Length: 116
Image: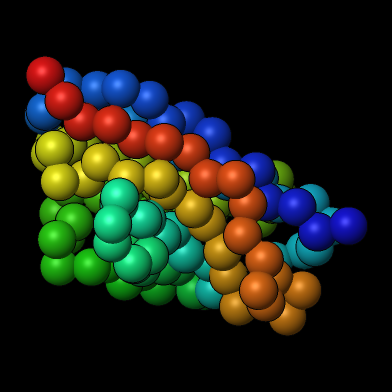
C-alpha cells in the first residue's frame, strides 16, 4: 500500500525556519522526480520545489534562495528546508512525485503557519 507521510510543519514567526520531511512507503522512488507542493486557503495547489533522481532541483520563483529540497534515497525520504519564512508561505504542504503508483494520490500534508 502506497503511503506518503509529511511531517515537520508548525507555527513559526516571520523570518524563522522549518524542515519538512516526507517518508514514502510502498514504493521505491530513487528513480523518480519528487516534489513539494503547497495549498493555501482559497488557492490552488502549487509546486514549490522538485528534485530529480539525479539531484537536479527546481524551485518556484517565490521560494528561490529561501527553500532547499533534498532527498535520501536510502531512507525513501524527501526533505524541504525552509528559511526566511514569510506569512505568504502559510499553507498545507504536501509531497508527491512522478512514480506511477502516486498518480492521483495525496497524503494528509503538514500545516505550516507563519505568523507573529
